[in-house]
Image (tube, rainbow, N blue to C red; front, top):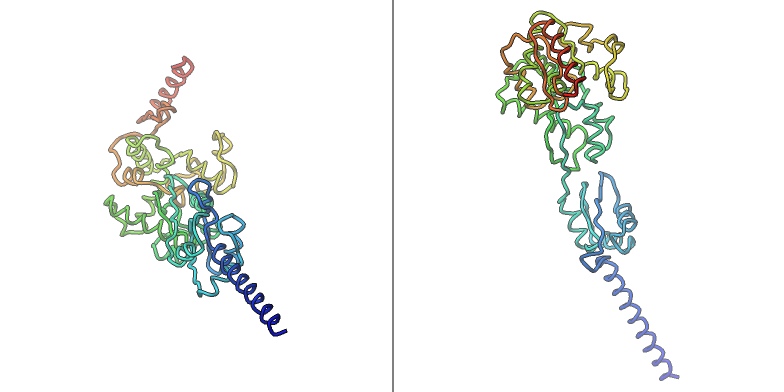
Length: 345
């Protein structure tokens, strides 16, 4: 009996040892890269907001075929006292669990590159940033752009930051929130003013300049014509003549009325009751209608010296305008351009 007992004990120990070896082997195997070759692998952008748990991250990585086992990922994280940092990371099925841990602990995030075009409004910028995964909420961004503390910090004499968010290519840290991003855009605006040697000490004067630049931004097509368009508006302001800018009507329709961008401006549109309607009211509108870039800002800061009071599109394909000093000349130019178009030129 003693020999038989010893035999079974040895067999049991061997089975336990084999079982332990199998568990250990499985433990390490399940930490290896899911993809063992360099061709058939998956890349994935992992977003870790503040407060996200390791268990949630493990489930997301399994669901997107990046790791083999969420249980092993979670267990190893507990054993190693793993501390991940919030952010946006590019992970791959070629990475082991240890490599993923190293990345998430390092904070080496994938920055988000976004190009903000000239002439967008705050709401359009907010939508672009949300669609690019820079911010979580466009509504929150717009709310922050109206925050009195923010406006006071930058000495913006208005109820929103329209006009003060500089259009540029940005590299955003995914950990930034809506307020951080807003500060980044506004800081860049004032930095660009310094580079362009445009004075910004007087908030009221700057606000008026930015307001006019925002209209010029939406009117010009060719950079060399921007100073001419600025001169037209400045001449009209000097003599208290309405600016009559279609761009302000579009702003009313899209931003105040919440309607789609119109294909054409109708005569009824010109009658809309709004302080932004430069066909009904002389002088500048209450504030900027877009966020102008360097060309428009420079054009208003250094306008051409002309006696022009009118301009109209001469060649829509080329983006050129015809400038006139009198209403008669303006009307004649319009008739001549209509004849050319009807003749097929």
